[in-house]
Image 1 (spheres, each protein chain N blue to C red):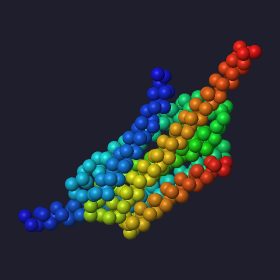
Image 2: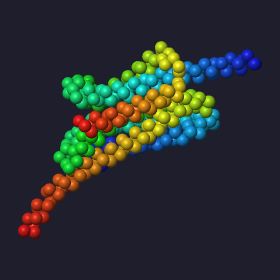
Image 3: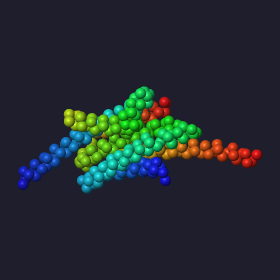
Length: 116
Length: 168
């Protein structure tokens, strides 16, 4: 009985550790995707052929842009998860990195369209 | 009511529901315990579903109806910046809370009452979704005003000369 309880606790602890590694991988992926989103907006806005190419793919550049963001988020998250990145797992630094990238990317986006 | 107007009303409605659900998760996470963990997980999925619905509905309106309707109108009105700044920023900024909304259920399934970094992550993500959601809703209101101001100007331009003729 005691062995079964210990095994169950160990399995639960391993599942939690896996879930945390997944969250850390997708947190890093989200940070990169948010920055990618803004960089793509800048390039698209200043290089019309890219805008036209993206529009040709799905019928509208905005559809392609959104799909590219979501696919990148899922792909990078899966890739980081498979490779155990970040090795430190989920830390307070992960939240700070994600928060900073969202705030800086949002501010840069606003400034870009204010100036251009 | 034309279908495009139904879409116009529906997309911010789902956006607000997603925003409210994010605040719900934020408040639950501030008081994280074993007892409310299930509620946090469910609410985080609600956030993701609401943002997915907003993406679909807003995308439908924006890519099919906006350019030939509101955008053309705003461009002829007194506030073309309602599109040039607010719409351009809004349409791209939206993808940040969308990605955060999809990420939220992944981190919210951790034991937040035991795992402080996970709890902090949920707090940061939900606060950002709520703040960006509010900014996007505000931008939407300004874009609507831009279209309304353009219509007012058109009506004034067509009715004022007629009124002057009657007076003369």
